[in-house]
Length: 170
Image (tube, rainbow, N blue to C red; front, side, top):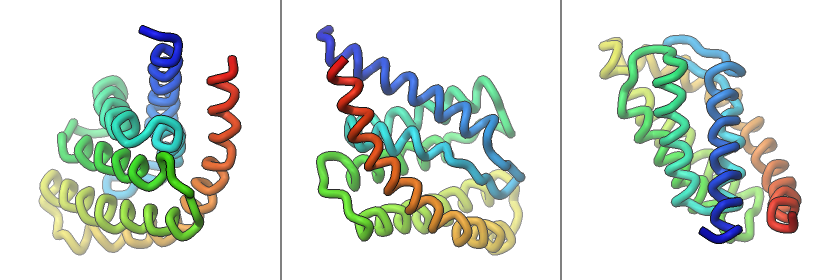
């Protein structure tokens, strides 16, 4: 393995561990809503290494987090959502001229299709509660988190350029 691959794998592994910590210990979790900034490490991976690394990292973080620190029963659907979110981040952020509009579009796509759509479907399958009963508090959470996610991702993208220079110049 060359020096770049070792640095990439090490960096991604460290960011996966940060994602697990942020998701499992620094999040507000209820049975139907989870408020977390665990998306930040995946955004960094997506911007620096692309959709393959970010999608795999998100899925790996979900599996390891669920196995080591379970919040409820493991359900493969949430891993699929994590994988697709990582993929979406990578498609929008890797080797692209990232604008505020592209960040808004990306966050809207992930929020509506994955978080409100798929995750609510997974919760419906697991709990058997009515879809709309699950959806309403999740919509409120999404509306509250939307501006924060956009602002944080914008700042992270600016900083990840500096982080990338530090990693590859050392």
